[in-house]
Image 1 (spheres, protein in one colour):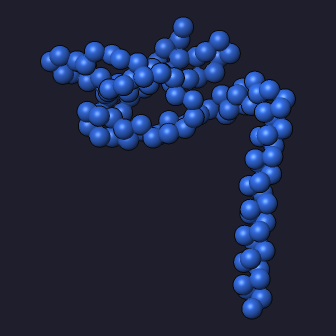
Image 2 (tube, rainbow, N blue to C red; image 1 turned 135 degrees about the horizontal axis):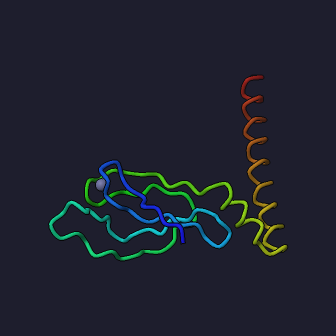
Image 3 (cartoon, rainbow, N blue to C red; image 1 turned 45 degrees about the horizontal axis):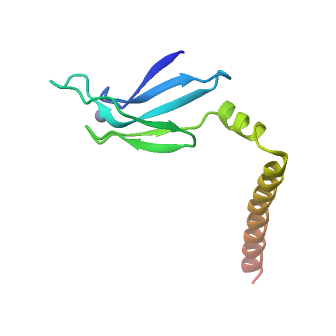
Length: 113
Ligand SMILES: [Zn+2]
């Protein structure tokens, strides 16, 4: 497996990036950041793979590093959905569009006044 350390700006290790069986980069997040310069570095405890996008705070120095899900990972997740789930997803995406249109309509109404 291809592994790469994921670090904050002060080189504390927040997790490991690995390529899964579909060559998609995933982040295996550690429960606590690892400071290799410490006299007794923390024992590595893996929290688990991070699926979405979220800011991860280094608990050694407080630096916040945003993890972004890759487009490949997102596409892969959508591809793996059940046909029924894909329909639900489409419905959710359509909901967002309706909201935007309503918002624009309201804005146009307000401007017309
Ligand atoms: Zn740090």
